[in-house]
Image (cartoon, rainbow, N blue to C red; front, side):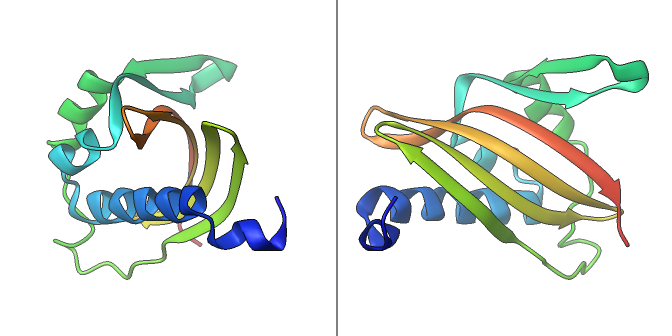
Length: 130
């Protein structure tokens, strides 16, 4: 990516997708998450004893619906796009955000489908707030 690419429509679209993601996380809004996550997406994380836990997006959204939102607790937002890697119609967003009591880092694999960017895979790590 060159400096002129920083303001490309693709990068701006991915940054807008990240903002929707940040807002959805702050509100724990499953419908808002659902608007940017492809129905075939999966959420992947490291489990206990070095296992890999893979959750279909529908089940993950059901869990989101049960969580208390950072907005409800008046938690300070700390949303950041760490990087955007773009190759034609696919991209990886590396982001960080606070969802107390954790600091979360997400790698969001995205594809340009049906005229818009959609998240097709979420891999995340959560650590206690420092």
